[in-house]
Length: 227
Figure (cartoon, rainbow, N blue to C red):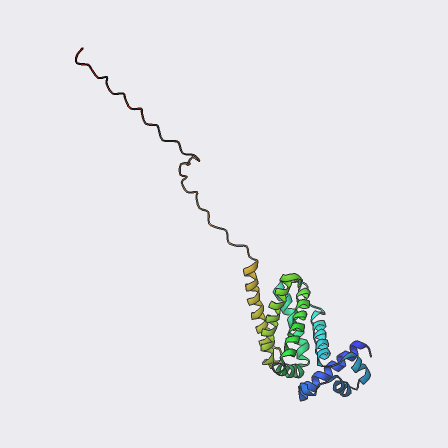
């Protein structure tokens, strides 16, 4: 048995136990015993719930990335890779639902799992041909994480065989996310053309000095009456 086969068998056993008896009864040792796996190897590869959940997420990502669409519009590529990941969760549905019920009672684990899922969203973005690097990539990962949470919320109540309600929820969420993204990528509208206003006469930098007043005329000479 390869390491990958061992991990897959232990993960399947752990989620089966969770679905049947709850996550309080899940441990690497219990999962190994249920699956008939070597306890020593289980101890080496899985030390607790964290490694089990981390490996589960990696297996879900591998299932989503294998054979993902590489052509078509971005929304369709994202829809495809998200549904592929849901397909893996569906194969362990009872255990995943038990995990979701347990998370509100363990907030540190919930916060850690949200961070791990955000990392997974980065891989799904890359699979769809969208960069997950840098500040923009961080925003995109959080946006796709919100889409994922919306779709999973519908999935938890979707008992149909074709998961039609889940697909509809992902379609709505992706459409909304695409509309929001478009607001930040479209150039601002051009300002309407306005004819220039009538130009006022140019004001000189130094206005001319006022004209000097004419000098006063000299008074008429006085006439001596004696002459």
